[in-house]
Image (cartoon, rainbow, N blue to C red):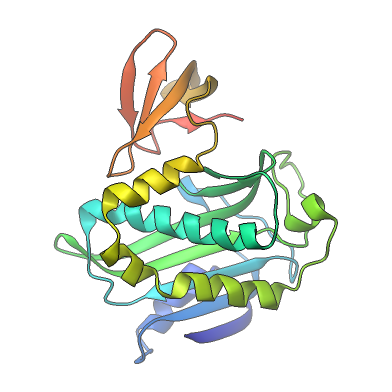
Length: 242
């Protein structure tokens, strides 16, 4: 797979979209040493010191995925990153719904997927990944961590990026040969806080305690509250506190 490296950009997702109109050869990857406007979910920013972390976007052209299976794409990306970190012997890994990677209860990786949609199909997918590798200071982010903080080891970012790209390369094929339910079942196996009593934030800053009981095929989270009420939530409608 072709790798395009840049020193700095607004965000690798945005750069990938502009480059994709000029690419004629299938899928490719864009990585940057620094993002001036890195984005996370719900319009949050992604902070990253220059040349300390891994910031990249995988571009999948003609992925031809049914729109109602978009969460399967999200789940497989999370599992792919999880697998690479597991092989790197990072301890206490988990997946925080819908698209964060945790280690020892701290966030170390965020994923932002943007899709080009035609009718009821996802035509192209832009999978942006930010992995905290060698950064050791995170201002005003008490729940953020990095591989270096967790292991006290300096990582070779180039080598780690190659492993991530290799793991993610055949993702479109994996989407076709695995059933949606199987993908979700594996994803749930590593889910942070699954079936444990915890606090959630709902609209208007309302807080309630409950347990994650399931994830629907469309990615909605089923929470059972202390009152016994069970309800499915879109990811923008509820926030898991930790």
